[in-house]
Image (cartoon, rainbow, N blue to C red; front, side):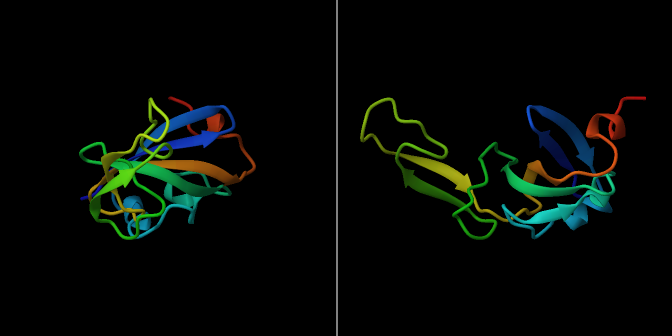
Length: 125
C-alpha cells in the first residue's frame, strides 16, 4: 500500500493532502513535469503538474535524473545546493524524476483551474 503526502500550490497558497490506495496508483510511474487529473486528489475539473517531491530519506526528486534510482551527484550552485562561496561544488544525494514506492511527498502545481476554488474543495469539516 502506497500513501503520498501531496502539497498542492496555487499562487501564494498551498494545501496539504494525503492520498492512499487506489488513488495513489495513478501517480506511480509519473515524472516531474507531467500532468495528472484532479480526480486522483478529489478535485474534479482541475489538472495538476508534478513539480517535485521527496523520498523516504528526505532526498529531493531531481528533474534531470532519469528513473526512480538514487544517485550521488557532484553539483554546483543551483538545484539542491546553494554554494556559500563562488565556484564551490559538493556531492549531494538525489532521487530520480519518476514517482515510485520510495516517494513520500509529491509537490503539485495547478495547471488548469476547475469550477470551485481549492480552499472550498478541501475545507476541513
